[in-house]
Image (tube, rainbow, N blue to C red; front, side, top):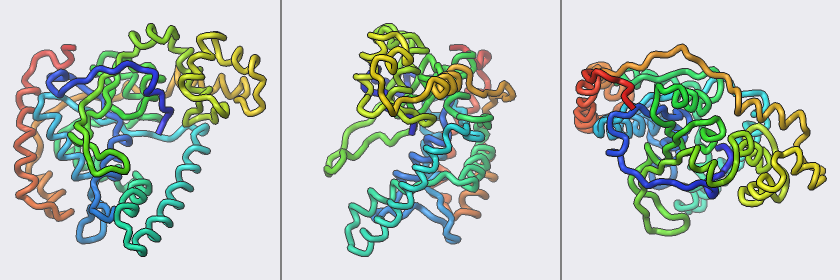
Length: 342
């Protein structure tokens, strides 16, 4: 999801302790996809309750949030609203890719190739309205705040950081930097280890912090020029110019100053029009966001959590009770006098 600008940025390896007592605005859809794709059985089947409802997202949400709270991090989840019309083509392409992956997944199952089946199954994950509502219901019971963004969740999270209501945005998506988030944390809700592609070995996963201003200075770009680089590569809202990746796009902007000059120099037939450039650039510079939210944390409603997870979705008490104990740090966080002491 989003444009891959990772190779351009310098990152800082961090630990949870670096974000103690900080508010982190987490891109909810991003982490839900992460949970739905990674929390699966050997053959790629997601976790399900007795009624056949997928529960991988609930498992990931309570466990990874517990880890954050236990380390005195205050998460607030930001959910996507209506997608921008310019995103329609990207969403349609993703839908088609999932359909192809689903077909290949069934073929892999029939052939008994469990490794291929699991990889393909991860590509079929969907965040449905039901999954979103279940996630919000669990967060309500946990007394963890969440915000419904009017449009892009990354834009809302980035706005909250710029406003000073959060320390950083938490997402795997570099779009947060295009939306102007001063600080972006990647891997915040990831598992502590990750399997290497096509190998049976794992690597340790650490949170990675990206600071926007120092990186812009290093790249010799303005925020607007960084957006122009992304438009050249291609974003969720436009097709890029064929053959241009992050490094080539960066050099082109450094040399020509803006995307209009780059296109005039290249004369590429498949380049975005000036009207498309203006629309996408404005979308990142002036996104639709809201100030209608409050951020409050309190210890979870234990009975409500158990009723929702154990009674309704067949989680075991033996698994949930220890996780709820990790949320006790919320009581200390609530008592802090300066909630937004960054």
